[in-house]
Length: 339
Image 1 (tube, rainbow, N blue to C red):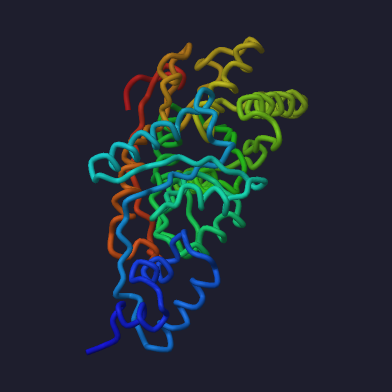
Image 2 (cartoon, rainbow, N blue to C red; image 1 turned 45 degrees about the vertical axis):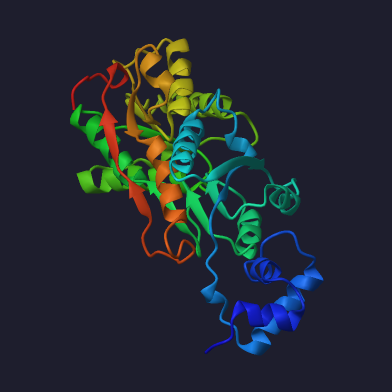
């Protein structure tokens, strides 16, 4: 008969519960006690894989740049799906917003989670710290080596948006993007370029423009649109119509901000310039004109994250993301209400 947890507890002169917490790297122990228990377990040849963490408390970690739900409500819907799935499985969810200047280790000790769901962009340093905690961790709308993740099918979504615009005869489609450090944005930018290639159309790299960092997302998107217009005016001497005839933006908030700029310049939407966004936030259907967009079941992202956490090996690197499918919703901003 092999070494048991009781043998380790007896040899280390601690309780069985202390051994369990030490080997699962759970809070509530001094570092000296943890190290001593781990060393005793190794000396006795105890297989710590026999201990399976029972997940009860799950922390939903969101970067501070994503927690302005009034401006960009995407993650509020993801969180709603996450909380619903936790309630159905009798898990206790908590929400933690963090940034690079916060003491994440201290906050994690207060939350004492058995598992962690990270939503959206976070800095590599934060991910490295989370990896060191040795707790089941899942990434939502994010991808990184060593973690399992659930993501939107961003490339497919970009393809649907671009195919819709091409079908309507639009050829000079601009892309307003954000920081390519964000997995979803980089994938949407890739899908935008691939769509031109697959359609056999010429791609003008001057039509791809990224928002400037350090300012509010809606202001940054408006600034990007102003730069596209200024660029077109500067080229007007050599081109008959240098303006883009459509804009595909990396999310709805950016598309709506850019559309307001065009309307303020006297451009007609969609006659002069069509618009398509991504995410289908509530404001998309309520705008004037209503915004065509790529829609995704945001609640399903949160729910699927909980599902992956409860699988047997949630930290095993999966060669392929779990992808949540997308659909396209045509509205008046692109000049069509049918697919």
